[in-house]
Amino acid sequence: MAIRQIVHIDEELCNGCPTGALTIEEREAPAFDEERAEALMHERGRVYITQRCFRCETGEDQTPLVPIRYQGQSLWDGGEQGRTINLIAPSHGPMYDWPPFILDAYRAWVSEKPRNVVVLPYISMHGSTRGMVEYLVGALAERGVTVYQFDLAVTDIGKLAITLVDAATLVIGAPTVNVGPYPVVAYAAYLANALWPKLKFASIIGSYGWNSKVVERIAALIPDLKVELLEPVLCKGRPGEAEFTALDRLADSIAARHKEQGFD
Image 1 (tube, rainbow, N blue to C red):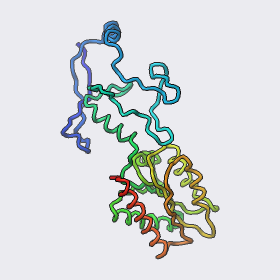
Image 2 (image 1 turned 120 degrees about the vertical axis):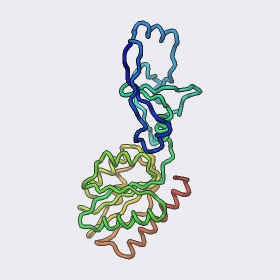
Image 3 (image 1 turned 90 degrees about the vertical axis):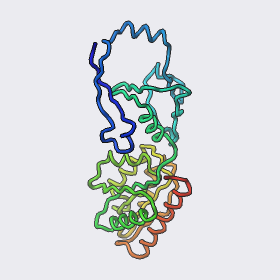
Image 4 (image 1 turned 135 degrees about the vertical axis):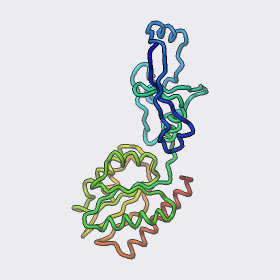
């Protein structure tokens, strides 16, 4: 008998905090018999759900397929299709004997409904944009909206990408450089456009010195995001009472739209 390892998931401990929920168990198992396995496969027939390309109907038995969101829409059928799944065995990595742990996470990823979350990537050259960002973060928090702010001068771009997956609104904080957005901000906008997240709303806040086309240029970088653009807030120089009032209105607008859509 061979000794094999399997990942065991404790359903009681797996409650949002995974500490201690996953353990590695060693079990005795018969040595693998390739000929017997081949015979069983022919005897049993196909027991998995064949995924197909949404364009050409080619099945995964014929060519490798990758799950995607096409034009912002989920292409996953959701589905067990009446089957009972007892074990998830990926092509690499551990097997999972508690399928809901994986399936629920996957359903959340491919669903069209985002969470009550605002992602706010920004950079600030002289403190004006940072002041606007900090004010808006506080205003949104007071209205019950979760906000993740990312200072792009130090942000791990991978963490920004992960957070975008479930967010409902993207607010970009951008100071003006040569009439356009600061380059790293433009990159963050480009990244959001490439990821096809579930975003429903977007806005832009920032500062400028003498003139700015930040709104137009950032909007041009996110053509594939099917979002409603909420009223941007730009200020010349440092923000004052008028800009803070406008940020309150933006926070009101975001919170109201999230509530209307039932995002939680």
